[in-house]
Length: 157
Image 1 (cartoon, helix red, strand yellow):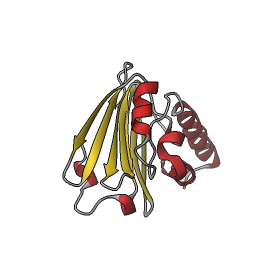
Image 2 (image 1 turned 30 degrees about the horizontal axis):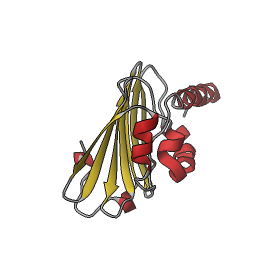
Image 3 (image 1 turned 60 degrees about the vertical axis):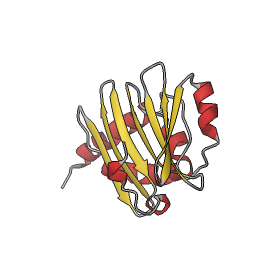
Image 4 (image 1 turned 90 degrees about the vertical axis):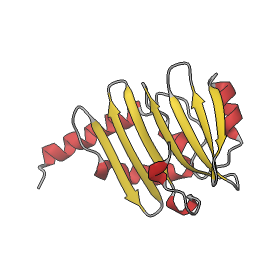
């Protein structure tokens, strides 16, 4: 059973980690439409490459700072998953959109303190996996009910 001091340290560590996640500007968000992809490309001077897959559209944004974000859009135009990789963490509030409060309420119970931060949330309405190291942030988030039939999120590039 964790002590009160260990619990307080873990919460403080997670609060610091969450604060650093607001370092980069945001892109399209989970559950939103894909109309912001082009606006994001212009705003962040990112290179955009879109690839049509059999069941979805993949949008890849590369910024000058080396960040890579992929947004996965259903054929009906809804973002069902996002992945990120880069030297700085993305703005998860914007990236998760209306799913951010759910993420925020689940995150404190899921994080592990230490030099390398790992976060795993597996809820019926939101799945998040994230690893944070110095200058190496990566993760993925998806909404299970929005994933197109036959698409495996573990196989997303």
